[in-house]
Image (cartoon, rainbow, N blue to C red; front, side):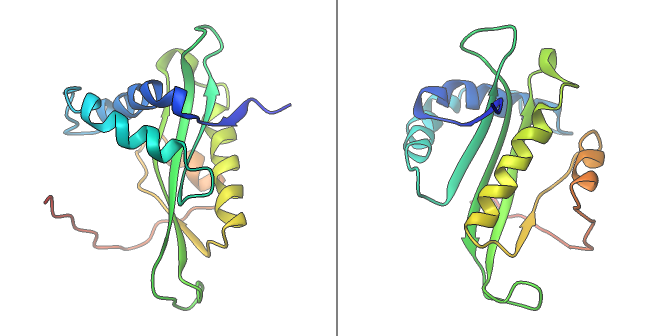
Amino acid sequence: MSLVRRATTEDAEEVLRLRQVMIDALPGGDASTAWHAEALPSLRRKLGEADGDFAAFVVDHPDRPGALGALVVGTVDYRIGKAGNPHGVAGYVFSVATDPQARRRGYARACMDELLAWFRERGAGQVMLTASQDAESLYVSLGFVHKPDPTMILKL
């Protein structure tokens, strides 16, 4: 029996809590949680779409009933095909987080394994993510490699 399960609408508040754990650990992360209430309805809707382009896999916290111990979230989208991914289906991993009291138990790896299987089922030819220094060794062990990508962002 796997510890990992697909997150449900009932997990939405805990998903946001763990997302904030991840945000708080990033350089320049914004510790504000005021946005959680506004984000909750959209997140619940996405968690309720079993066959959509969004999935979250979680492990229940081993010591706190009702809390999550780990979280991995990803989306699938279409990009024009290219060599190595001619069909253009791409996965993107984000919000990988483990509760500080549940770390070093393999939960993030188990969740990543489930998410990667989900991507494969949807025909993703590549999976992208942004790695923190702390998590880089996990991703390398799963086969991820660095890409010289001049990524930029514009906030609208």
